[in-house]
Length: 248
Image (tube, rainbow, N blue to C red; front, side, top):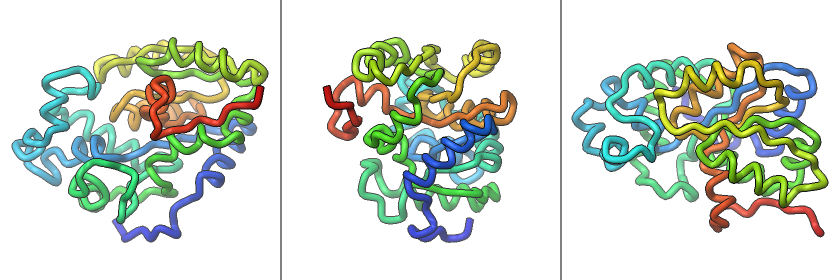
């Protein structure tokens, strides 16, 4: 992977414009993101030994609980993720001097670069990986969703549907909730959403989102975006995200 300078990163407004154009033209679009979890999945066997991967707290938690949405080792997910990253419209990655992501630096941009070089991943476009948290802070994001049908794939889908209905009543955003919890559900979820008409799909499925988003765009010709933990953070009123709200 060639060194990507910060000035090469697309701005949030530029990415939003790309999403809007794709929605209007009904053209497939995929925004996927890479953070510490995705880097650790990618590192399996090709960059680090399985033993080294399994020593990370992220991998240990994936084996103890269901919070990570996958249990490592999982080479199949790694391979699916590699293919998805090669095909995605935009890939969110950490900055070299990362200030927002709290994970250890060794799991961030240095590991991204090692993995991308190993697997010959050369993104067409890049932006910052936390674009999912910053877009909802803009009125333009909610205006984009005005009057639209939005599939939300998330374990928080039902609660977020009620939140949007309560806080953005005039926007008439129709959230179609689809619950997701782990890797084994991916094919089932893809089959479930296939007949549902929607303008955009927001995916909050942990590291699985990289694969789901790209498949939704490529196989179902959808506009799809990795929405990360945004629904959970918004519902919990976490200070790491401050969603724009219309004046009453």
